[in-house]
Image 1 (cartoon, rainbow, N blue to C red):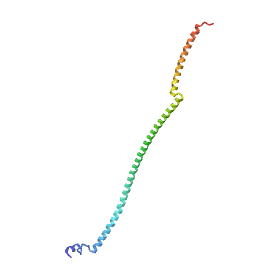
Image 2: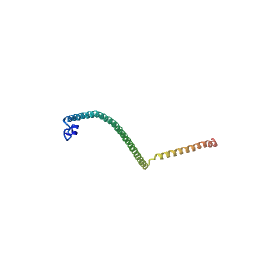
Image 3: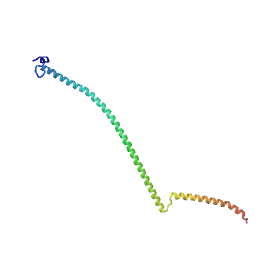
Image 4: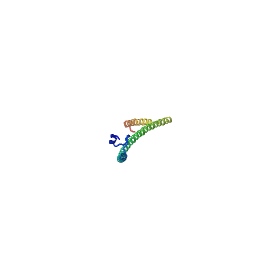
Length: 153
């Protein structure tokens, strides 16, 4: 055994520790493993709690995003429904106008006067009524003069 081997406590040239040191090393490795396990358990619960907290935050974010998307979809659907309603109303208006035109043509072919024709006739009758009344008033005013000039019999 040389001086270095004697100082280091090794008895062979390959650096293998003596039996007592192996036992100590194994004991230290075992304790290190237990310490790592305890640390993992301790840290594991902290990590688990942190993951739960992060999960709650993520759930709130995804819920808010989902509600936002639902609001957008609802808005788009309302807009589309309004557009379709406006188009349908426009189509009904066109259909109504077509129907009115066809009915008016059919009535005209049958000789039925239109509302405009009736209004014009009413205006003409009113005008003629006023003219007749004016002439009647003038005739009534002229009659007494004519009866005065005739001798009584």
